Length: 401
Image 1 (cartoon, helix red, strand yellow):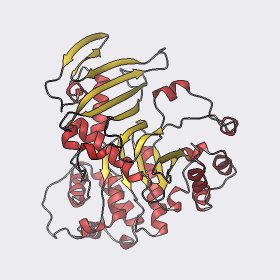
Image 2 (cartoon, helix red, strand yellow):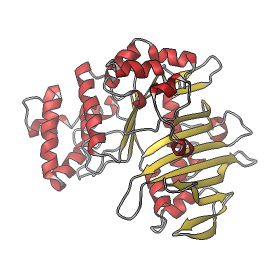
Image 3 (cartoon, helix red, strand yellow):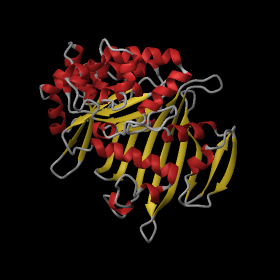
Image 4 (cartoon, rainbow, N blue to C red):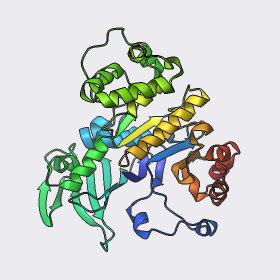
């Protein structure tokens, strides 16, 4: 599970953090209203369900862009990542052209039969060469458990030369290609458990790009064959239903019943009507199918999932997202929104407020860092109502963090 992200020198972000990093978790201050009132800086780790709110152009989409850039960098290399998804090259991503891009990601891996509960923090430094082409300047992966005095580096490479630890033994290594991530190279090997776990976690982030125009433009006869997972655009929804019907018929029947119950156009209909509906499904149907995946990705990143939905459908979607994170405790959803309805049942530490100052500096604050917001929530006021009343705007203007 992703607990925190620090972004340095990328796009709008000079040096900004969302969630909690390893040093924050090791300090573990008491998170109380007294501490908030005293102005003590508290870290709030990202949880299973998180909403990003804020005015247009305040950095929410840029945050997703950064995570997508990190994923592509680890998988394909920084040069390829710099021109994917309409990015215009590495140097155009930099705020300070003389400084590298730095990413710091903190993860929690729960206890398993063979390994205790462990925190891992991956730090990535990308710098351009004399021709402006980026390379891996430095990669570090450290782990920490509550019985350890200090974190331990289990991977560290600088300019392609470094070491990894495996079962207490240190092995030195050297990368042949400055475009290949050491995390990827060693993460592919089974014996490096936490290196592999971190690599797979990043590699399986799923960026949802459902748009009505994509599914409405599908041909009537979609290519046959079952697909295990939805693609990012949702254009293979019928293939996923076919796979589920064959491989997991009980789950398929449950899903058909939920779709009939949840989608107005399908109420009191039958399975045949559902399959016909999925020739050109609407957005809510795609989300219901995505959240029914029995083997889901560890992190779903969704921009404005409520866009275009009527208010009762927004409530249904919010409920489905919450149920998904309860049913899959190792998974997360992070979404952006401009709709107060969808955050009504969220807690203050599940909401992050993005703001942008007069000089284009970005501010990111957890709603729980505001003593006023936290107290109103304790008194029974919903987060949607608190937002509608303008208290999150006050946070952005006053620079609370």
